[in-house]
Length: 204
Image (cartoon, rainbow, N blue to C red; front, side, top):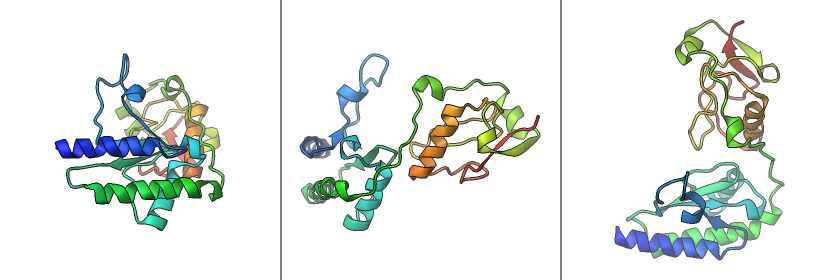
C-alpha cells in the first residue's frame, strides 16, 4: 500500500505538469465544511483548461489509447491507482493524458452543461417519497414538468447521486441541468424515459 501511495503521489505531480489538466487534491476538497481528508489513490482530473468534457475525454482515451476512465462527468475524469499498478501502467496513463491534451484543440466544441448552484440543486420535498412513487402518476413533456411533483428518481451517472427524488417539486434549473447533461453525454439509468423527453410526475 505504501508503494501505491508513493506511485499515486508521483502520478498526481506529473498530471499537474500537463497543460490544461488539474488533479484535485486536499486544497480543493478538504477543509471546513468539506471533506475531512483525502484518499489520494483516486485521481479526479479536471479538464476545464482543455475546453472539453469528461465524456469527450473518456471516449477519446478509450478509442485512441484503449484506456477506460474510472468515472467521468461534464468536466472531470477519474483515474484509479491501486496496489496492482506500477510505473509501466501509470506511464501509459500519463502518456495518454499528454496525447489527450495535444488532441483536445481538434475535438468538437464541448456542449455546455447548465450546472445549478448547490442551493438550486435542492428542491422542496412536497410529498412523502413513498406516496409520490406509488401514487397515481402520469408522464408529461419535460418542458411542462417544472412545478410538478416527481414520481420517479433521476440519477445522473456518474456520480450516481440522485438529482431528483420522488416527492420533490421539480424546478427548471434542475431540469435544465439534466437536459443539457444528456446532450453532453450524461447517462440517466433510472427514469422511465432515459431520453428525458418526458418525466413521470404525480397526477394532478
